[in-house]
Length: 65
Image 1: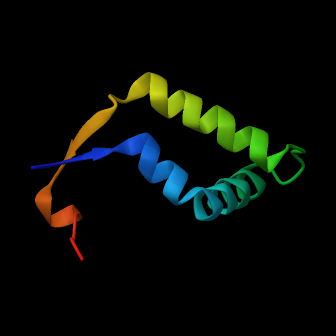
Image 2: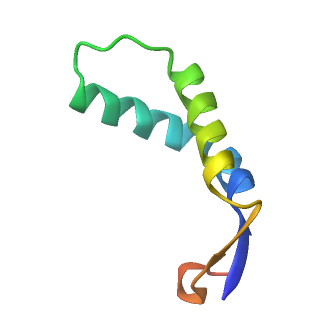
C-alpha cells in the first residue's frame, strides 16, 4: 500500500476541490450563500480531524511519473 499526505494533496488540488465543493453545495442547497474559500478552509479542517497526516491508499490509486 502507498502512503499519501492527504492535506498536501488537498492543497495541490485546492482550486479544483474548491470549485467541486461549491458546485456540490449549490446542487444540494441552491439558496445557500457562502464563501467558497471559507468552505474549503472548514473542509480541510474537518479532513485534518478525521484523517491521519499520512493515509494508506491502495497502490493502484497511485501512479508515479
